Length: 269
Image 1: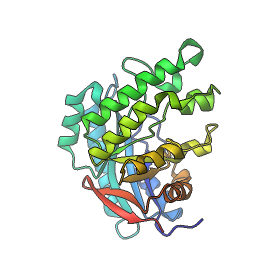
Image 2: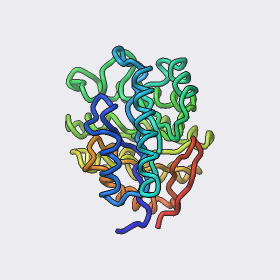
Image 3: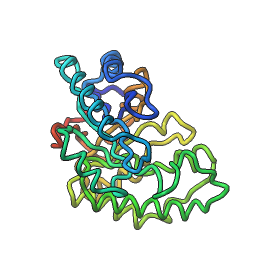
Image 4: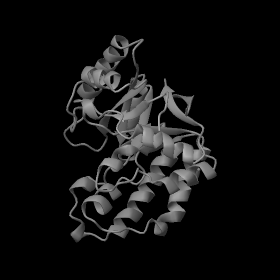
């Protein structure tokens, strides 16, 4: 398994609350790991109670822009954000998108409204099927809002429900809403992300898994982004080749990067 074009469209610098390394060091790591493209997509959690959004956006945009200029010719650096929970404050989310000239926006949901991130929940206190029903309905609302480029880690809660808490989940119970989510992405010309982080966790699968990626293709999905969700410079690109192979196995001939919010397709070869 060897591919000539390697890209990581989901990475976090120390501008993310859980990040560890600077944008410059992230890019150094990308060059060392033979990546052609990196999107720096720091967390911008719209429902955060303590984030200074103005300071965050100015600093993160400046640092990603500086890295983009510095590594020109060695590495294509894309200025991005992972916009979390945007529909909980659409006005703020849309203001941020209007104020900055990003290349790429990931849309994600990490928590239900007025609740903690799925990472922190004690699942012995919850009906996981109730949580997942609310989660997928919230994702559907995000897709209807439609102001992102690629939907990040569609099965995000499974990292913690299935992976950490070892609770088996029958995803077929949510087949209808998942199909509706994918159809909405297709209708709106949006991308689905293959997030490879789960391959290196107890979950041991991509987010979403292969059958959902295949369904996206069968429904007419055209755009697919692949990202490691790495928070460390020396883990950039983890699983990208596996993600490319999965995409190929599902019938995709191209993966997608974004420049100035426009899709650019790269042959999988």
